[in-house]
Each structure stands twice: as C-alpha cells, then as structure tokens.
Length: 312
Image (cartoon, rainbow, N blue to C red; front, side, top):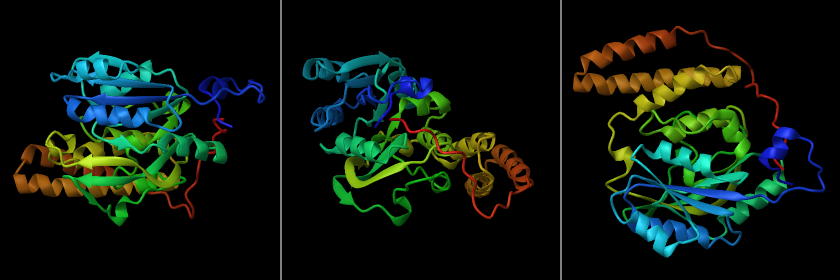
C-alpha cells in the first residue's frame, strides 16, 4: 500500500483509508518544441494516467508556449527566465501536487506501461520510496546497446552511483518525502545535477528497479548539455565533496566515495596538464593532497542506515 507524504510525516492515518498514489510528471524544456510534443503525448498515453503534467519552460525563444497551450490544454505550463535545468525541475517540484513525482526530459519519451509498472512494483514491494526502470537508447536515430557499466542497479546502490550517473531522471519515480529529506537539484551545477541528487538520495534510501525498458532516451543532439562542457568530472568532484560532508554516509560508502573522489581528481588533473591550465592544476593538486590524507574506514561490510518506513 502506497502512502502519501502527509501520511508518511504524521504516521496516524488509518490504514483502511489510504489515499491513491497521485503522480505529478515534471518536464523541463528549453527550445525543444520539436521534441516536446512527443514527450507530452507519451505521458498522456499512459495506461495508468498521471494526476498532472507540468511543463516548465526555462525561457524558450521558440514555439514551446504555443505548442503546449494549443495542443495540450490539460498540461500545466510554467515559464521562468533561463535559469537552467535544475531550476526548472525545482520549479516543477515546488508546483507539483502529487505525492509521487516523476521526471521526463523533453527529448525522451515513455512507453505506455511505464507508470503502471512502477506503481505496481512499489505497491508490491512496499518499503521503497524511489523506483526506476530500464531504458532503450537511441543515438542519432539508431538504437544502441548500453555498455555493461550502464547496467541499472537495484537495492542500496550508492557505490554503484559513484563512477557515473546510474539513474536517469526520465526513468525515476520517487516519493515526495524523499525530496523533502534530501532537497532538490543543485542549481549551482550546470551539468551532473542528477549525479549529485542521486548520491544524496541513495545514501539514505534503497532503489527499486523495474527490469523492463520503459523509457526511450534519445541522444546525439547538438544542444545536449553534456556536449557543452569540457571536463565533466569537475562537477562530479563538487558532488563527491558534498557527499563526503554528509554525516549520514556509512563507513563503507564514505571510503568508496573518498577513493572515487581521488580518482576523479587525478583524471581531471591529467586533462588540465594537457591543456596547460596552471592556475587550476595547483587548486586540484591541493584537493588531491587533502583528500588523499583523510583516514579510510575499513568495515568488513558496508553499514546501512535503518530501512525507511514504507511510503504506502
């Protein structure tokens, strides 16, 4: 039985009067009206409908507004100045009314059973507050097979989330109480904002995986943020430093995060040296010395925080 955020916080709602799960779908977009309609249609085509769809327009200069208002009158359209995808998602989080939250990038789409399969899995398992699915990848119009390192994790997955972003926003559904506990997307990060959020989430909550590809992710666009920034590891370094400042980390997770941080600093330093960026080299060499000198924990098994009460 899925529980609402109000029930989760108060704990005194009679179990024979549960509220139905209400899913708010948040679609951030910027100058992607060509693909946005496909994304919205895929949500409207869900066999188990969402309670609401919110399109957050991050200052588009194309026909995004007219497309939404003329073709999708049931969609809530929110507009803001161009502040970035993190601010757009956070705007959607603040405006959403559902007790469950799902994200969809405006260039991706869902298969019709996506929400139904996730809600059924959450109802069946009971104790999870975050769920994701497998994916189909399309690059430049052709289907590609993800590498083994991109295999979707399940359970306590913090350490699997350290090398790369192991959860795709378009595949995730999470309970509102998760965001209330860990916060939203870091608006200071132009990219890797999802990597940062999943580290905060997975240090506290186990993740449920629906082992079925229910999201189609499209890549290869010129406007993809990951193509605009050299040295993406510098943003992951920021996220890892934040994670190490979290007292909630188990000893095993802390050790793994510290080792990954040092690894990513070394990789980024290699790129800086190739480019002769002497001012940054000194900064990151100091970071490496500081984090390499930290003592490591040596637990036989990673310790986990107590399992969270079911969000039913």
